Image (cartoon, rainbow, N blue to C red):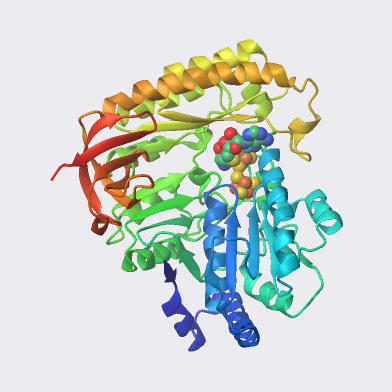
Length: 489
Ligand code: SAH
Ligand code: SF4
Ligand code: F3S
């Protein structure tokens, strides 16, 4: 694993000019203080201390966890996958109720480890902690937790960690909102050759089922300069593939005032990122159909470095349900957009997210969704059962759909989604694809696993030396969500 910004740490300590990053300097000072503490504990215990970071939720959370892990490593902890560790942190998601339940189950188990290790610290952060009810639950039923913080002050982790190491009380620090973006915090990438890059935080869309705007706050875009600077650093550090991250990437920059030179479109931004020397492939996640501009389609068409994959969340294929979801497009708008994309970008894979069981959804509404799945010919779709999130408008809607009806509709939809995806996958048979090699195959050591531009995995005979390299692979066998192939040159 590669720690980014380690060079920066020394620059910052040598009196960096950039005052905007005062906060990151402060946090680096806390890293030094906590380091002394950890080294003291190491001597006392006669062993190295270990830390485990567990992530739930989306790519945004995964990127946040890379920041948590970097701080823990700089402080002196050794990374471990096991929750039987000296510092355990759960970075939570609350988008659906099952995400909440998974976290609480894991947290419960973790308390057993603490009984045998009095030095153990347990922390919990992320989206679930932005909800009062969840924090209350932890305070009441999970008294053994040492540190709770939210999404807005994650940059303060070093400081909170230091405070927690010096206290035997439960520390809780949750902010309701923030307008702050702290640059230049250390990050420890999971992969040396690819990385996520946040381009914006928060969401302004308030889809009526969704908790994200409440737990991640309003949209805040990073300046293009900061984004490009981060991409340049990543490229210099060996990164070849970048994923631009945001809840609604194509509203990037809308929060900048007119006349601000930073105000550029998402299409322009992604084009700029592809120009960074060393970057070979750029992805993005997630665009909103209502903001998908012709400019963006043209930029993708003219720029082969932009991955041939668009994740375009549909949510429902029924116009009335879409209206009640506050998605701001109709069934026809969505299909027209897909048509335009398929015409101008024939080699692009389109994937989607669909919710089944939104309040008031009838069988015929799901038929509309099925119709869109067939017409859009999705390469893949993630199907979710609607989960009531308290605090969102939809939670108060009448006519919540009975479970058995949801299940029946879900199964019906899933069958079509799977058949469509399988049919789509055959188009890759015999093609030669650029593949970024990610790892040795989990089941067969003679095979390598890599990612095609369309975001699907391909397994092929090869050497581990290829990890992190872009190679040409001929697709020989389709298995729906993954492929087998052989090196083409
Ligand atoms: N910003 C992205 C992704 C948000 S969360 C977007 O606009 O699409 C990822 C997915 O979770 C969503 O696309 C949606 O399909 C699903 N989701 C969000 N809230 C949900 C809920 N309450 N119940 C079920 N699925 C939900
Ligand atoms: Fe949630 Fe809608 Fe924002 Fe996506 S765009 S994060 S679904 S509110
Ligand atoms: Fe979950 Fe938060 Fe992402 S609620 S989906 S981790 S923004």
